[in-house]
Length: 166
Image 1: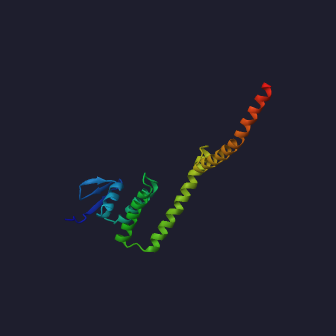
Image 2: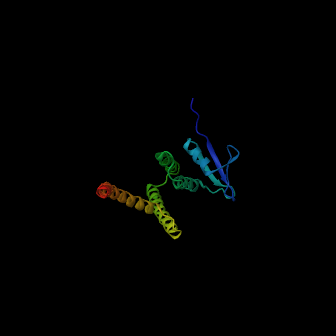
Image 3: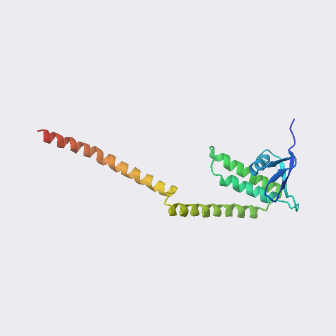
C-alpha cells in the first residue's frame, strides 16, 4: 500500500521563519528540501500578503545545497540539487530558457565568489588552493632532483672517505 504524498502549506513570517501548517511546527530550508526529496508537494506563502513564495524558496534551497560543497559522497550533493531543480521545473513549469539562464548565472556567481575568496586569502597572506598546488608541484620537482643527485652525492662521499682512509 503506497501513501500519497502530502501537500504542505508553509507560511513565511516577517522574521523569515517558516511554519509548516500540516505539522504545526517551524521548519528550516533543509526540512523543506527533505519534504521535496520525499515526494511531498509544498507551497510557500507570505503569511501577511498571501503571495506565493514557492519558487523563491525552492531557488534558495537549490543554491544553499550547491553552496555547501561536496559531501562524503561527491555525487550525493549533485543528485540532491538535481532532484530539487527537477521538482522546480515540474511544479512551476519554468521555461527552459529561464532555467538555463539561472544555471549559467549560478556558474558565473560561483566564479565571482571563488575570485573574491582568492583575493581575500592573498590580502591575509593565507595560501590558496592554487598556491598550495604550486608549492606541492615544486616540492615534487625538488624531490626528483634530490633523488637524482642523492645517489651520486652518496657515492662521492664514500669515495672521499676511502681516499682519506688510504
